[in-house]
Image (cartoon, rainbow, N blue to C red):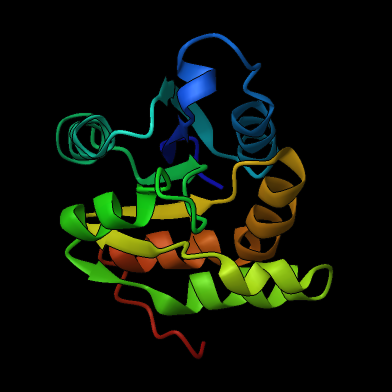
Length: 165
């Protein structure tokens, strides 16, 4: 993958943002993306706060011009899980196949996967993907989408090549 594909990893965790928990999920995402040829240039932890999530996603997509942002955490059913709401207020459109593929992969391991509200979508020329908050969940979900990321990001950047070729 081209080294100009810059990525951001945003962990959404109240405990992590207060320093009460080590951010293993963000580290896992950064390692996987680096191995896949991405350059993780932004890593940040914010609390489960819609304004902070939205502000970071907008800044990274619009001002920092990242190609890819992955978030970790806040996709479940807890009243404090606000990532999907924040995402939907930021993205121009959803890419439902990514979230569907992640849930399908996770369902092979646990029925709790159907409770995920993870969203994937596009803002401008940036693809944003919500991942679970656990290192294992990140590894499983990001692992299933990494093979399609280069093609998707090339298309998002305006690649005119025929998809079937």
